[in-house]
Length: 173
Image (cartoon, rainbow, N blue to C red; front, side, top):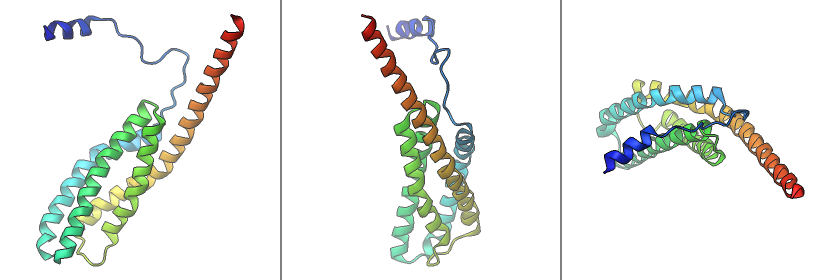
């Protein structure tokens, strides 16, 4: 039963997701940055986990808790941030793109704290991996804001054109 429904869905002709004549507002520099960031993030997570396992026994008890909490928050925020960035940019959704940008603003000082914290030992692997992530974050703060500006401007124009079209159709009747 479910297989037949699935087969019917596959056989049904597909509609175009993009209507001819519409402008795509996806910002390519942001998408390229997100693309490389998505492929870099697993390596960064592995490097951080290896570094954390290596230095965990040398940390003071309160720094064990703080460091572990910071890393868990960073891993979760990074996953959500990249998802929202892809959704917002590729599907032209302003709320998701704004969420991506705000999470990027939130994660940047946390990442700087991890690199610059003098009270814990920052291992060379951890420092190198986190500096690369910080460069991604700094680039994405600026190009994410530009992308957000362009997308909001395009959405406002689409809304105004829709309102104008609705007004003209009311006058014709």
